[in-house]
Length: 323
Image (cartoon, rainbow, N blue to C red; front, side, top):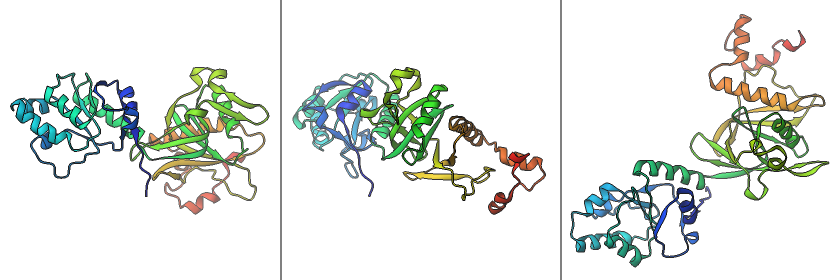
């Protein structure tokens, strides 16, 4: 069963710049556990079937227009019933004036009351995006995450294979570091993985023979980044003479992370190979493939070969590097 994550209400208040109207206790202790947000139109009418009390509740123009049709005594009655559902927080948008009955109900049932000046739709989309990141399923991988020409490249491999050294060379060439040694990967949607570094080791790197360095201090703020999408996985391994490596690039390989397939490559490490340049080319080639161009297919077309070649035939293709 997947692990469920939560985020403190205090972090949402800080990230979304919310005004605190009423707070019954330390917001650090109030945990939000779901991405979903509810606008309680049906609940104000008395329909509580299928009501999820774990969701943050949001009041906007339509909800206030509805409750204003009732007398203060009637408003107090159905607001008391609503606030008694053990909800985590209520947010009012558009800086709307809060009825006294709502403040009373919030105090009675100790429900945080917050407010924002943003329009409802804009705020809801921003809040859902924020919650998706904070509550996303996550995994930590041993590797290095760098941004190369706008592509998030996750470098994997055994300890000592040269991941950090390759990342340093990429940083010197103008690319950016996101994480070294430990990469925290979050699944923020059904198609997107976002990688970051644990806060306590952010921007630090280990280089054997040199020690610990701070990439941001040495190379400047332009050399680092807080988060980046994982667009490609590159595994570095020591060159094995007995292994046949893909020379054509016709077979698309993928690595599955948190249920999402990410394009992947295996690059053999050998003395004299410039890994930084190889990774730069791999990043640009990956962008080309996403835009619909495959150089291997183009070459085979120009040679008059059949477009759809069986996978086992590719291993017997001519070695064009020999000409």
